[in-house]
Image (tube, rainbow, N blue to C red; front, side, top):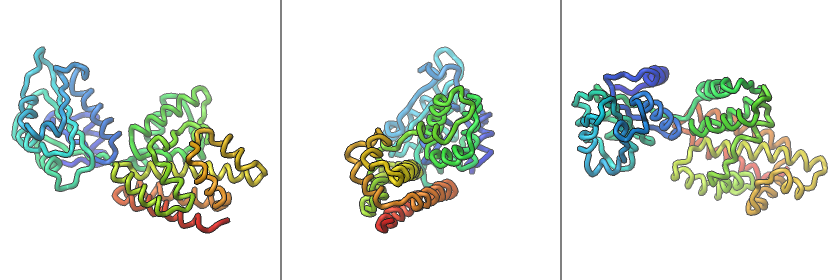
Length: 342
């Protein structure tokens, strides 16, 4: 069985084995799947934009005609050279085409299949793990070690350092999707260009708000004490394929802003001024829930929640299979805590 793990994956991606031209990339981190597929395509053909060298296929369409994959793999490029096939797997089974190729000698042709989460008994995964000319590579959310390396690699390019308190917060805000994490780091590097060091304020200013992912109802419901809303909206997000770590990151940003706002209110700033001036992107529909949250939580309690969410984020990276359970439990705990004023 050929299912690569850990350093084996890095070694294979750096120098793909020509004897294993069929490569299955699967897992919940869609960004990491795409990043690895892009790298494998770039090293497979001379020009990824040449339609004669690189063929893109849809897995659901292949399911109706699996033999098309075989035909494409055996086709010799019109002008010679190497050839690659990139398949985007869907919900339908096209493993029979892959199984045929597993018994075929492929010359100068690499086949990369991108898929989401696949169970061990999935036909596509079983075929690729058993075939002598194929490999299966799981793409799970980055661990703390992976994130540390990703941050260092991206910031080294821009010759930037990262303040220690900024590092701790940044680590908690990344990790759900490799491509999204990389994009956030590049935005951060561009924002801090020429400064030499990235501060905590830089991180809180630049790292994207999760409202674009329509996660606000979950987060607002938690801090407003609405456990039923948290449970229903969290379930919807899971069905939609949202990585739970992204939701926890949104909750961390909200907790940090609430803490800053609660301190300002305690010092005499009117709550209305905080809502209007301190959080300019806050949609009017969210204001009632945020006002309840500010009444529910004191600054010390918000500090405890920030620590609780950081622990949950770390536990989710350590136990990826339990990420949804850990994330939902943390949010429901906040909702229950909100019922106790002070």
